[in-house]
Image (tube, rainbow, N blue to C red; front, side):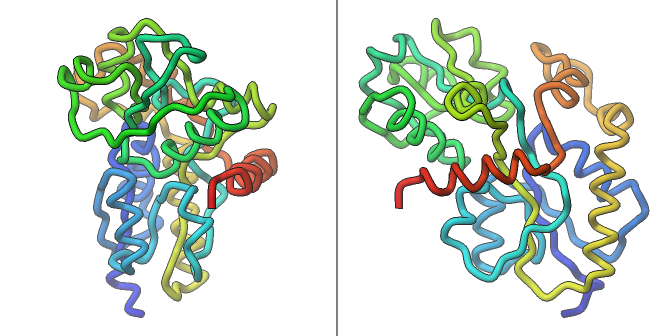
Length: 250
């Protein structure tokens, strides 16, 4: 392939800002095209080979072939993550219906794994088609991910952080998304890409300087990126990923 046109798809959430900063500002890579998407759209670009490198929901790793995990970094959490939650007007034992945020294949599968193996509940799973006030009116319980989580946290009596619940269940961290490649890309480009990602993680304070004031009024951005999000794809996260994929429904 012509590496002057390496196509990269990344997720357009707050927790990926260090990645984007590293890609754009580190100087380690050039001659690339970067597109920002929600997790489901990023995944589709990888599935359809419309991108060469992508940050994709890890649940897809169970079904995709001929992809390779690259870099030692991911979107993960050790305990609470705050941006992937089950919000409910009822406590867990009383939940009967859950509306699912299909922006993330991983979160949808994670809540189902927790329901079956940990919470021992069997709710009706519904596709979430509305947002904001309509969701609040029509659904007793919803799974919400990403930036919109911060807007809805105080609208529900009960909040179950899915990463924290996974940690209680398994004693392990959780991995939501990882970097993969689907094309034949040279080792030199992948190494440079990895250095760019590492650079971004090492410059979190710089990466958030361009965020407009008031964009995330309910979030301590630096604390969220340094305390809630755990970027290193270490052995514990690899163990957790393997267990999660094994527990997923076929």
